[in-house]
Length: 173
Image 1: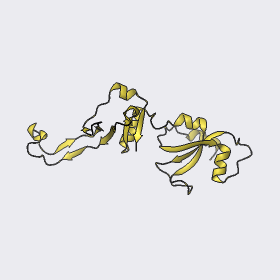
Image 2: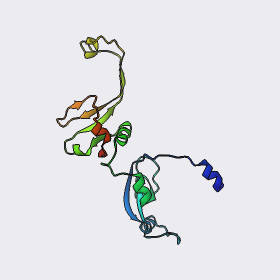
Image 3: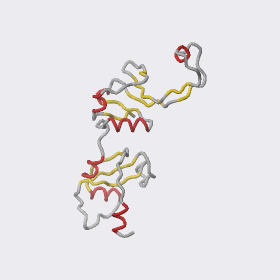
């Protein structure tokens, strides 16, 4: 493919990968991979060894995911450490089936999950839905639930503006 054709066919993307990473130099990365560093590359350049944990076939027997190298500046502009995520990152993680929490909630056992919607085909006698005049089937929409500090589940958690503007969200393992 010609250089001009490649330039014309480039499309903008925004990344959303979850990765593991460790800082090193380009020389250390090449040594780790068993490669000779090219003569025109700086062996002292700061880079990250990056392992993609959410997709990609492993390409090194020492890792479960696909590994590659990223220059430090490129990596730092693309990734944030877990615990420094914004609300959009937290919503994306919820949609991927992960639990999330604010960093300030740590140690309190609090977290959020996305509960997927469902259709209730048969209403239980004397249930809230029946008492309110609903007839089956009833569609329950997807919603975010919270495990509270007391161990209870809060159904239909609502974010405050502080929650939405915070940059301290974390994916809970």
